[in-house]
Image (cartoon, rainbow, N blue to C red; front, side):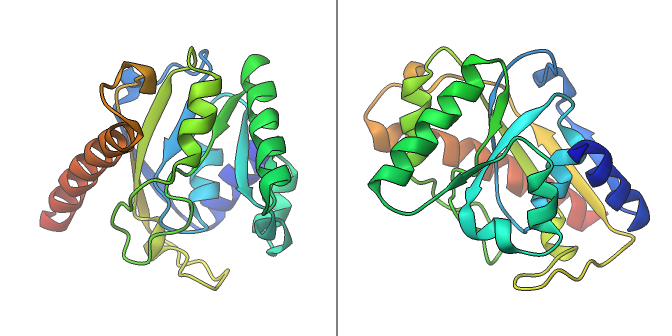
Length: 204
């Protein structure tokens, strides 16, 4: 239901997609999907691009936002509440989904990037990655959503294009070094690819 709703919204707003790196994404596999976070519209982009059912991880405040909250209520969402108890439960919920072959979408940056540039990831991503170390992490670069839905508004700017690039899956356990090195790995590959897309699209 959520996929039809998300794709329908894209069509009504005349939003088009350019998908790169399709060879890195197998819809029949279970992933820890880790896109960057530019805009609340990223949620709709995920509904449109990810082929298999997935569970969203989001702050509980998103569930109260008109349009967005409705869309998330249609999906297998996991709302994260502040506090230790809430954090532990969300990790348990994520593991439960992954063990039942449901991919989980989590924004490692935690919050939206005001500039669109990739932000340093939070340590929370490592907690679920360590708990489910056999599940591949799939980095996903999303470009263009910040121009469709600005911060603190649900107004949609139509006739835009979103570019999505799937990067090569990896396992945090295979990255040498401490937690900072593991987080830097995600940040570096995401930043490199984001900048490549940005430079390419600006030149068009």
